[in-house]
Length: 439
Image 1: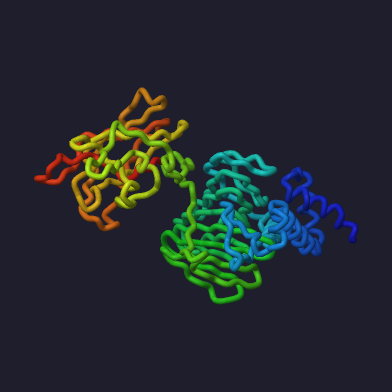
Image 2: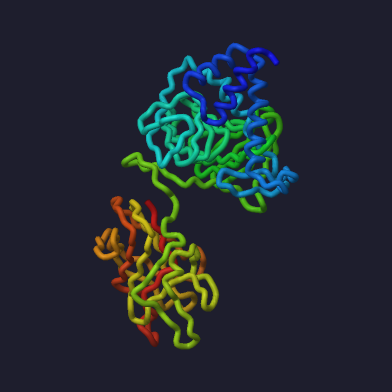
């Protein structure tokens, strides 16, 4: 073994385990710049580390089946036929390109952080970004580039700001909003570059033993994928692709496990206060109660409030298991969602009901009220829901209601009036399909 290999190997293990000190990191970078043979050595050690890390998480029976090793950042497995994953090569490029960028002033800064846990780094809102490879264990960060680009990275992730116009992502999820000059920003991945032509798009990267899967979806505009070996590919609004392989060879598919490729970030950056807000529906699966609910005297069916937070909509379901809540005849009703803990919330989405083909019920005028203790409530919104006119699925829209951010555990919808069917034997009632609550 060459003399400089010994110290280098020790530094690599510390770096990959997040235990390297700033002084050791400087030594690490210096060795890479002084010895050209260390790049390939580093690649080998990263591949070994990735393999050992994955194997350590598997049971003995899975160790005999390497095709089952692939996992995305959210922990969901991909079928064996899609096993092609690892981002080790990108980590090598990250360290090497550090030196190419050293002479440039980085004017990228952290504009927001959300419940972050960095391995070996201390980052605060307002801090400038550096060329250092960052290991975000959990949480999310928002970076603002001078190219009029905002990038939100969600952990677990490895990333490195290359310069004022590009970022390298070796694992994790990133959502990008580029409003600057077309082509002035790109995301570098293990399989190639994604150049933004003025758009919004998302990327998520899964890591395995030898290759990588890069999933990208364009929400608005257009992105160009270039692997440097073949003709660049245009990905336009509404399209998504999964790119499998490494820096030498890839293949592209538009479905994963039989489903369209989708990349969904869980945070968004607010324009007003530059804060990261979760896009997760806080009401999903939470307990809901009501002042009362409709019980059918004909067949004993009940339309209770538990259906309001089950992620089913459109007056769907089946007898004794419908997706919506109904108030008793002639009542508009009141329903309350318990978030189980206090959150800062600023938005409620409601989907009305028409009671299927009967078209004889639905909430009309209402108030949205919030409370911390479930006793004292404050009205945040007074509004009216539109009637659902047809049974077509497209008619069941979510209506959004925003208000200044408040702390709340309980969210109450108080019905003031409701829809009914003219010349019908009863007076109709209030009702809702679904309630969604957001930060």
